[in-house]
Image 1 (cartoon, rainbow, N blue to C red):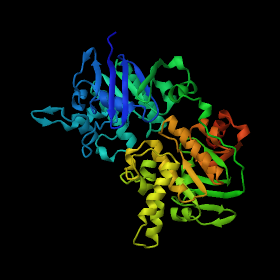
Image 2: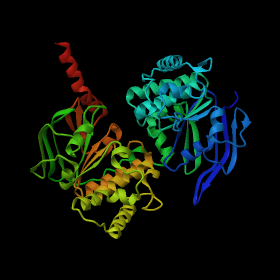
Image 3: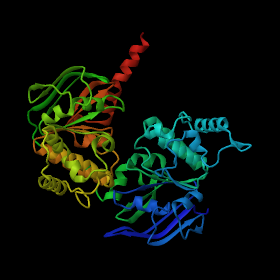
Length: 506
């Protein structure tokens, strides 16, 4: 069989950084190849070289046995190489149907056949299982819809190689299944796939083989069945066992500092739990169970319809984030890019943002920039945030470093209660270990953490207790000695099962 893609001895350096060092990789037609490694391992650089976004310093690239002496993004697409992170839908104000047939609209007697274009777009999207209004402008679609339509268009363009870079980050479970069906369709058509994901379970679910990159070098390429499990893959990536990732420092548990009683909101009801100083309280539940809504209500982002909140025994009223901050509550939201950060602003600005807000609230007309710079520098050093400088835009940093910046914001603020919603989502295993370590240090100072996660191994790895939310209600509480995936999953599904039983008896 002729290899679809082969890269030989690829080298690439940036000022002071050797990004890739003699990287070799080959993929066959119809093969789904996972590409994994910590942030900075060289994954993005390699993909950008294959798609022509970066020029290699040395080495060779072959497509179906033919060497590509020079490659750029336009040529790579002509050759059938597509990356889903690239903006295939280049006209956001045009409809889905218009984008599908951009440059190749069906015509008759010189006129565009709009009805045929709409019908064909609808037919194709239906074939791949995607329900989207083809008359809608691209800009009106959700992030997930844009991604799925982009993937669908790639299918239409008869690709030879498709590269997926963290494709499930914004997808629901249903959309993820649809994506995997699309990848299986590509495989059946003998299209090669490179699949990059920090969600390592997906590698075992969809890939045939996996290549591991570390510090710009290929550690090895393996058949997925040869590795066996995520537990066996992680040591190959980071050089340590999975058990060593979860930083669980033994910390004395103190008095109750937060108590919520019968809290009721739009998507949850009668929620009661408590949090003690020095404690990591895990919160588990299925997607849509109400976990995020509870966190947002406690932080003052969503309205509380009924119930009470107590801080250190005193009943408090929280109607806004300003109220929450005043009572020592900090919040790291589920989607850091949309709700947690100011992407175009600097590291310094993002760390000091809450302090700047205080200055504005008091109508002061100056900011002590010297003090702000010192505070930002101290936090960057303390949390080992990797950034060229504190004046660097946060959007150019890795996901793990972005999470650290939000943590730094609240550490500089002396928050006593931190609510962390999916804090390790979309970051590599090395950065996850760093976040776990920082959370351990936070509670060792007598602070308390509410840790919301959909990933049971990490939740069981670092939590002292776990409460389970099911269909908007607390289904149960489990102590550390009694943790088991079966028990937590059973609780997570319990209120949905009970609700269905109730419906059956009506």
